[in-house]
Length: 360
Image (cartoon, rainbow, N blue to C red):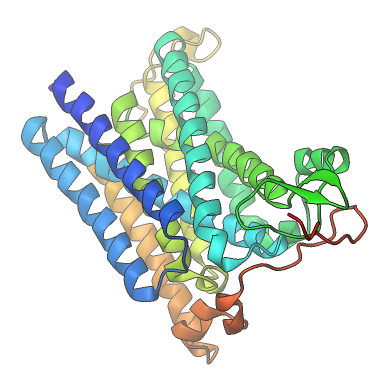
């Protein structure tokens, strides 16, 4: 039987994580800039090291099972967050967000993601505690998501906005020009939103969609709400720096989506097996537990997750090298001058071209 983690450890962990997030947020808004590859690498390394130290503490204070569940959950959420990051890249590109302000925009997107995932974790934990059959639903949803991930193309959705963003775009008066990090501006004497509001709406609704598969996936590894939330926080904390470190390389990692799809499929199968093992549904096996259903342990899950991402990443880099492209070129993309951009006109938002009030 697993030992319960002490309450003081859980409370202290949340306090420390919130302080780190607050410090990160303060840096972003006090000193807006474009992080160098070296700076981004150091921050990503720092957050990865922090997660590993946290896993070690869980091993020392709790047991190996807790530490294994956290590592497997963290790696799962990290891999799913990379897919989330790809969509962030598309959103930044679509709305021509000036690179100088992308750190702040990403931080807001990450905070939205944390809030939404926190809500989904509470709801998921409540459902699991009340209805064991919910694992069938979670498992089926992940299997569907995995198949869709493997056989759909990012390019198919690149030129599409989700319905909510289109709806809000038609009902909000949006200017054509960014004005720093402001949400409101004055155009020809009229108060209007800047394109930043549409960017935030796009990030928020995207985060909501990703939370729908992210939370069931990690509940397939652990049913501890504390571990689930901690794994999500650690996965999202280094996401902003990873965005600037990898840049356009994400689009070049051709096989990455298959690795992520395989992880989702594996966890979906694991959830279905778990549901069968704990079965209480009357019309399945007469409501009796299905004893032959295998119970996949945490360490097997951890090995599958690591191997899947490693194979997908290495295969993608080999394919990239064979195509004659260097990793450095893929990271910086085809628009190096964009690094120095401060303010750009945003894509047309349905409003006529206007000039900002010179008195503003």
